[in-house]
Length: 364
Image (cartoon, rainbow, N blue to C red; front, side, top):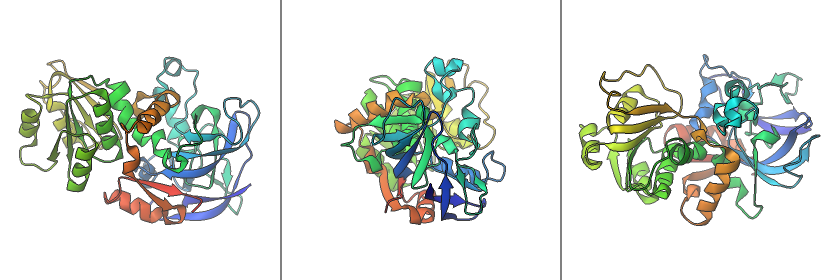
């Protein structure tokens, strides 16, 4: 069928909304009419000429929508179901069977090369294929072809257009705190970067019962929002002696630290802000070599890389929705919506830090 999709045709060019052809669902697949699709910094990666996924490509990996058609063998959802789309995984490798689907042995080809492990389901007006398996969904479009593995059914009474970010950015921040690092009640945590992932970590830390929650960022407006969402303390990232301030705030060092920036200098601060035996979680793509003091890890500190919060979407996303219903995880406060036609404006607003979590609405 013919749909509309935002196509990135060059590394430094704009997204263009085009009429394209979408294949019918094959075995184990379904077609979802997209109602909302979150945008995060991961969607900028194909702008790097050295990255594995390259234009022409349809991005978007935080989709939500309504199932319109299902292929043979799909039995967990039906036409008309409301769903949130998350990352793809094989579900049969050792890590997947151990409930670590974010560390699927085929995670990178399934999610980050844009092509996936099957033929591209989207072709342009000239019949040329367009990479359209970004995180198994490519949801910057009116419709997406996804597998049964990467959908989460949700109640139809929820504001579906706002739920897409639960599939990646919010899941990553919250899952890192609640699942990967296992932040405990009464503990202290420092979150570096108060974007969508960092603020989700702040909210999750409050849910976990952490009593000292420190947010660090360059933008005072984001630090103000962090305080409203649960941070007990905030510090400017460019403060003259940030480490001393962090150690004083946390009583000698934090139990946990969490870096969302990927910047080696910030990661060094995140590690050295820990007390002995503390845990530092890293998300995103690290932007260079990480050099630590020779004694940094000798006192029992742990540094762990985290993908997708080490969360199983079908488990964590319903949990986060329940917390939202209770008023304990107000992720909707991060969202600002844009019609799909304004995708380039949304991207610029995100890059400039003016919007925490842009959500594109293909139907508007």
